[in-house]
Length: 490
Image 1: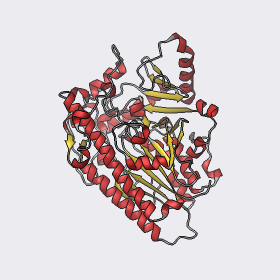
Image 2: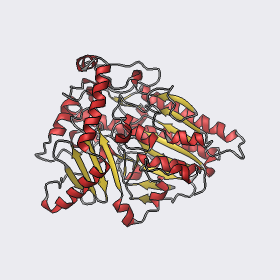
Image 3: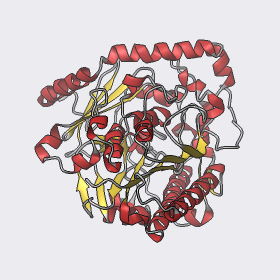
Image 4: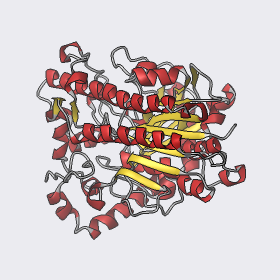
């Protein structure tokens, strides 16, 4: 592969089903659709943890959550584990970030020559309230999902406009720099929409009249699960809606934010074309995780269903097949080898047994038989979970392991909406055993659960104990740069 520049575009909490190029009949994403038309869509892409901070740490380091110990939204990436940015710097490649990082703070050496408009964990400590898992508190701040909805502007939509402004300016400046012998650069541009609050600029909200919104699927009849019940008792998202009309307004707002962020991404892509940089720059788009958006009565992320753990991912540019799809299962940890290969870092600096990812460029070419054997792992140890939750995806099957509780098993080819749990089906007993075995080859789920809880207990003690943190409460979202933290006590 010829080395060239790489533009990485990330948004936040984008349900992979809610893009036109992924088949949604209503959501308008013309710029990402255009990117997909000239590139390759990854159909089975996943986050390595369905919550912001651990997902972004896995993306940065190329290592699984249990390998690094960045467990939740209060234990953020601090540069102690080398990132792909550090490797780029060591080999003389310019590497810059614009927008949300959600790392510890701006002073940590996380592998960027420059951070522009960075967002990091709130107040330097992150979501302390999310550390409380025994017992789970009621996160009253989650009412914001139902009450702060509809048309308008927020600090987040304003922040995204500024991020796009800065990215366009950076590309314009870069195009004017004469670097005949310079090494390829990487620009990581990270937006925050369609993350809540579910408030969208009026022009975008008007595209989606609430009365036209179809409500999402409900949980299967008779379904009960202690892990789920605990999550819903902590995050009182759905219980905070007054009625289905209010739910439709929230969903319409989310659709609008998807279109809004598509417009901001389109501005950056148009600048890339206008400057001539597109001729020697590849582009990858992805999200940090998804959002349930009311499916099964769940909102936000924090579980292993496709709406939450699945992510959109598109790659385009020179040498990448146009209008193609890749069915190989991939995840955030695959970005370390992808980025290093894209810009031409020597192969010997890319390979390491400590980094389990595989370049996306190789996954695009993977034979079908090999692709079906590939395993993707995701894990969750954060807010709302009474125990660790893990996902193994291999071929048509998805296995969800709830530590201490019964598992779930889905055949995604036959049941893409994950409504028929096959874990109790005798005909699937062999598949269930095999996928649990795959999980245990990667980690000990019980020991990892204890390890995460021990790290969290130490941090709870450092900040005054359970009661003090619970009284302090938490915020419904990380404030944008320059915005004050707004805590809602329990």
